[in-house]
Amino acid sequence: MTMRTQPAQIQLSRRVSALKPSSTLAISAKARAMKDQGIDVLSFATGEPDFTAPQPVIEAAIKALEAGDTHYGPVPGDPETRSMIAEKLERENGIRGLSPDQVILTVGGKHGVHHVTHALLDPATDGGTPDEVVIPTPAWVSYAPVSQLAGGKVVEVQTRAEDDFLLTPEQLDRSITERTKLVFLNSPSNPCGTMYTEAQIRDLAKVIADAADSRAPDLVVLSDELYEKIIYGGIPHFSIGAVPEIAERVVTLGGMSKAWAMTGFRVGYLACPGEFGAKLIGACRKLQSQSTTCLPTFILPSIRAALTECDAQVEEMRGAFERRAGLIYGLVSEIPGLVCPKPTGAFYVFPDVSAHFGKRSKGGAEMSSADSFAAALLEEHHVACVPGEDFGAGGERCCRISFACSDEQIREGMRRLGEFVAGLS
Ligand code: PLP
Image (cartoon, rainbow, N blue to C red; front, top):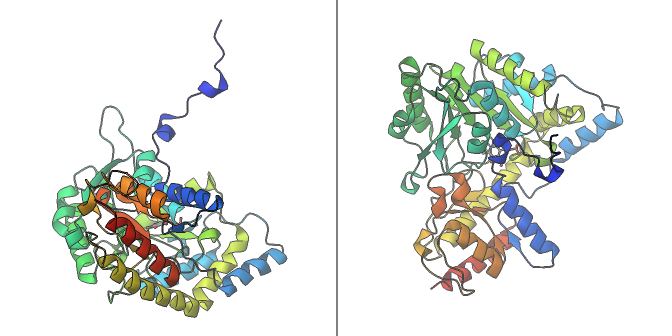
């Protein structure tokens, strides 16, 4: 007779058991829970704009709902919206020759990362080795776990604060092997707040082209450009997909979450030109058809409104981020022992706090890592930021401070951070 397993003992899959939850969402949840208890927590942990989506975006969704747009839509999104994205990518990003079939709308940018990794990567089979994924770190928290979930082997390449956390061509060249299938690039960067110049991107593209011609013929770049419009450091955004030699092996990931303050709408997109682009986007369609089916249909007019009617609102928000970037960078730089590159894009500063490791806080907490620094800062001075451990190698010395909040909050939060640091001994 077989024993019946108690439900509590049922095993989850090894894949999901090994999957890390998103640490950025976890710290935001802790800050929210403290706030709910009436504690005056200032949160610098979230990765979303503090603005509401532009009015034309909201009205377009309401109108669509009122018109009865409540049914399933085409799996990759409607052709009209995909054409508009293709035109935008050609006009603004220099990515040529895209047809709507080489574009897919996804349920947020994160969904696009799931699609590409699952469409491309194979785990180790028959005693072989898994496909490798090169991730310059510190990097956005989801690249590594999602790549691993898809079966890939993550190869972290640690960038340096003195290089503004940018990958150098030499580092990229050294990291690519005959098993490398995917290279992540992210400019402007979450969590580092820095960007590549056009010349730097072109140098990386040359390494990709050379590697693809020699040892890594299946190499693909996933260029995450979600923050492309939140820039203020004098560096124009440049898409690696605009470099003709490698354009057909570059998947550009974009979306509406950040620049249009549309996080709750969940809109992302992927695009890749050429024959491979059609094949890859076709695979992503297949994955989408077996997962979310499609974007909510009443969101589609909002995407079109965002692309055609909201330039002024996007510029206004960008201007606010520019002002806040200057403010917070000045305040953080005045705090002894905190060192960070000047932010040029996105809405994060990423100071290295390791000068304080080995000290104790007033509350008696030992500063042995970014984790303990952030935990004591939250506990004792009620300021939430994200410790850098989960951003990969190099992140463990840093904390991510999001400045998607008011000037007053920035001033008060950085005052508290300064007070916390002053109390370390
Ligand atoms: N890529 C980067 C670099 C991000 O910072 C984020 C969100 O924080 C995403 C992708 C995912 O964005 P979305 O909210 O559209 O899924």
